[in-house]
Image (tube, rainbow over all chains, first blue to last red; front, side, top):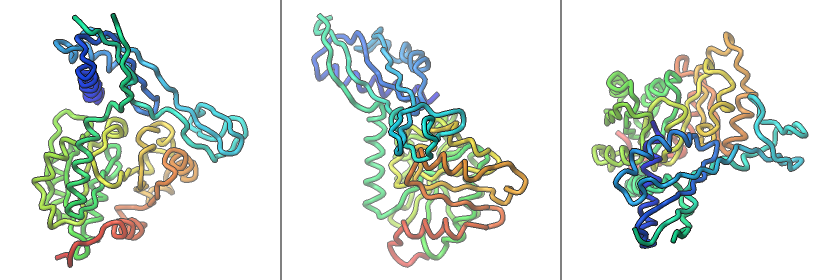
Length: 116
Length: 222
């Protein structure tokens, strides 16, 4: 359900940047979704088909780049996915780790056509 | 001819913009805002009920109720000393900045020191929407299990303060506090933790002291 609000956010961003570029039509949108952002691309796509109807971006292809959650070890420098119910470093076992990637949620770029 | 136009902007931009307005409004009145997050049943309302009487005479507190278990919670908060502004996000799974923006004018901000916003009980959706409050406080509870930070990294990754409620039940549970806190430390390294029991009152003093230290009374509270 919260994907509805996020899809509207995508549409607003796209419309703003399409207008600034003088675009008549948006054909594709590149979206970066981190695993930790909690958003499901399939749900965004579902709402997109409804919301984009009648806008400059109707029918535009959504291209998702999913960024998996990765932790970085402060001791051995290893970059690794979280284990099942544990965050300790998979290489050296250190608990001194931090989130290196997976929080992303942004529109990277749009493909536009100048004339309809 | 198709052409690629860089955007590189957060999808939550519109919400963040309204959240910034909320923050500015709270700041202009010297009000410290809390976004109270939790799963259903963790004890958000119990924490408010336990907190309000302990702040009475020291800080003036306003409450925005956004949880779906609405009217009952509003009655409980009112009984504890803060007439709440009720949001009824029908069917909504989270509060967003716009809802709080609508609620703020209905509060006597000039007379408040602290504003508690009780978010919808949900560990997923509310994690994505800043409200403009100053601190995100997550109420966890021991019966939920020590695996919750690992299962809900988005929520546990945005926490300023973590209340670990129902510690009076620890003798009856297999809750590994160390494992729980290790998970939180990875996701929210700066979060302060308050193990407590709203039922027995154990641990509440530290929580109240933290709140009081971050909230400056504008004048002698009545």
